Image 1 (cartoon, rainbow over the protein chains, first blue to last red):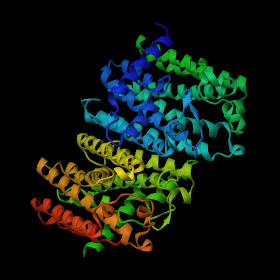
Image 2 (cartoon, chains in turn green, red; image 1 turned 120 degrees about the vertical axis):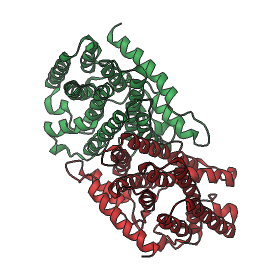
Image 3 (cartoon, rainbow over the protein chains, first blue to last red; image 1 turned 90 degrees about the vertical axis):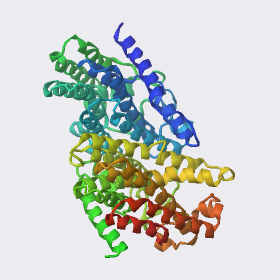
Image 4 (spheres, rainbow over the protein chains, first blue to last red; image 1 turned 60 degrees about the vertical axis):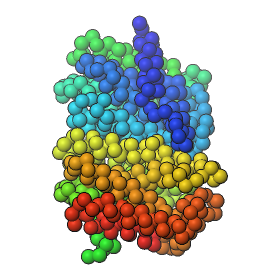
Amino acid sequence: MNFSEALSKSADEINTAIKDLLPDPEGREARVIEAMLYAMLGPGKRLRPFLVLESANLFGVDRESAMRAAVAIECVHTFSLVHDDLPCMDDDDLRRGRATTHKAFDEATAVLAGDALLAFAFELLADPDTHADPFVRCSLVTLLAEATGSRGMIGGQMIDMTAEDDTQDINTITRLQRLKTGALIAFSCEAGALLGRAGGEAQMALRNYAHDLGLAFQIADDILDVEGDAAVVGKAVGKDADAGKATFVSLLGLERAKEQAAMLAQQAKQHLDIFDERSELLKQTADFVVSRKS
Amino acid sequence: MNFSEALSKSADEINTAIKDLLPDPEGREARVIEAMLYAMLGPGKRLRPFLVLESANLFGVDRESAMRAAVAIECVHTFSLVHDDLPCMDDDDLRRGRATTHKAFDEATAVLAGDALLAFAFELLADPDTHADPFVRCSLVTLLAEATGSRGMIGGQMIDMTAEDDTQDINTITRLQRLKTGALIAFSCEAGALLGRAGGEAQMALRNYAHDLGLAFQIADDILDVEGDAAVVGKAVGKDADAGKATFVSLLGLERAKEQAAMLAQQAKQHLDIFDERSELLKQTADFVVSRKS
């Protein structure tokens, strides 16, 4: 089984777990749950939950535990997409190749569905089924809340919304992206170490891996925005250039951006050298994020 | 010290704790933190955190622990106000007597500030400073996530947004309000019992108290919407009637609504009879919610 097959098989399993774990759309509040499911089950690579499953696999973590943490991170990722797509934010009609949640439902429902997904992520993590030890569960809640909040992903989104182009340099944009996309990717990799009660060295190795992977991922995203095909990428491309927004490509140029992404992917893999062959799929993930077409 | 003085003194303490516990507005993401603080520090009764503090006081819980849970519930309450006020939801310009967050900042910032407040509530609860026992912290996270999510407050808001007037009866509106306002009030009262590791009987008594108190509170809100003075209430009044929305007043009539609220307040107090005189302020809270002018 090659990497794309492994990723795709994992995505199927994650989609099944999403349907199992999310509440059923019942009662007069069914609409908000339908919107949560619509947003969660849109076609997607499920890269973040895959990282949780694979990092947990390094330490032999029980698959059901890992899957619950995997679904939790997908809830937070999806919540952020639903809110970022809103008219008052990025105003996107297309996401993962189909109507965004506020287009398929309405704005109010999209706001509420995003909110409910965020709350549900913490409900999942705090549940005894996720891990027998409440200390581990609390550590997961803390790590995810920090990665999500004003000093994590949401802070990154705020910087992105308010950034003036002429004040953007490579340091600013690197910090922005470390918060906006890097924080959740770091959670995804560290969650496995927490679930497996791995020692400090293993957790640090995964954090460093995630750090490089997240940045490589974002640079690749900026490259796709320039070179990608909207039909394959599944969302509008060329938006950053149209908006005159600074990106890694506009700051570094296309060639240097590609070199930088490749270098980061290489470095990400090296952090995994302390692990055995169970880290193979994580290493291939690093190659994948810089070579993907969508 | 009478009840309003006690409530007002507690509100001052809570405001101080909010400033201490929330992140400082630093860095390029400062704007979202400023919006969080703006929303949190608007004038308000701080009723929910007061309920946490007083329910915790029944069991001699350390004040700092209780205050962290109190600030967490105020974060969730405020997040819900910020999102509910958005143009795509209730579209309110005035809240607690001043500009709503999206008016004082902008819509995107209000969405993000609400999101960040929700995440921060869980960050606060999961922190070891809130309680030494991680099992207690996890229980708080679970209870708050359930109270907030699609089967709690957010579910209630969804029902409220989609309710057709002609299908609204007293049972529907009671369930709607139990979710929309009751769930967070129930959390506020039960949090004290969890922090104090109180037995099942005590927790049940507080849950029953909260149940009656929450409904009494909502009926009183509907009465204020009819009889209140916008300048005192601090938000627009008469909105429900203008929107042709079913309320306890429209369904029961003004007099029966008042009787119902008074009866519920009385019943709420009776649930507290198993506690000693430390429950005095909680009893007075029941009288307060049905006699308040704002």
